[in-house]
Length: 224
Image (cartoon, rainbow, N blue to C red; front, side, top):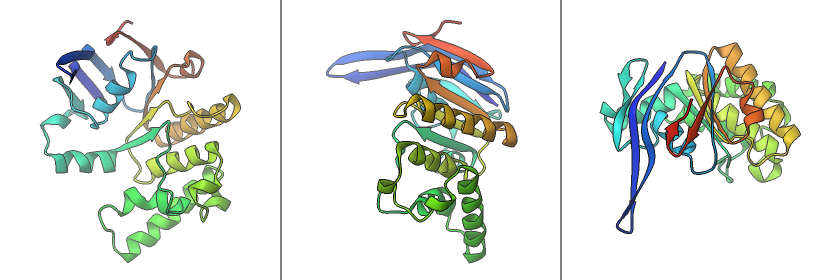
């Protein structure tokens, strides 16, 4: 499903270079739940962003279903991100001026569906919100939600286009342990039912323990 080959990432700042990733090789099978763990600064989020097409590697290639995503044009890559990939971050990124339902529908409306398609997407969004326990929150604004509710809304938004892969970057980092467990359970349940590949970045080894496989990063290297 995903293959990374010889991934390096170097940032230049004030005439200095910082190499965050140092030759990462990684294969992730379809419908697997993978965790990337390691201390702060190990390169977990950087690797996740490169795997998901959000950040370009300094060197190396990333293949999604056999296609080198960094050989594509910006337009082609954006389309793949919108249609095949879902993202969930630590800081929800819900737009404050839109309701929960409107936030969820944003990825679906990017390609300007017609009136019939919009109606179907709305019905789908409401169904997903119901499964996430947010049926009564669809008309609320983000400021009216708890942290756990915001993260559930962000997960539903990531799923509206039925992605093949869900990338989660510290999705429970801002939540208490009980709410964090609920969010992780929701992600696992959805991934299982939809045969979706999930890549979870976390510094919490206990959370990572429920993954099909755990990869450890340290100083920009995979150490297992």
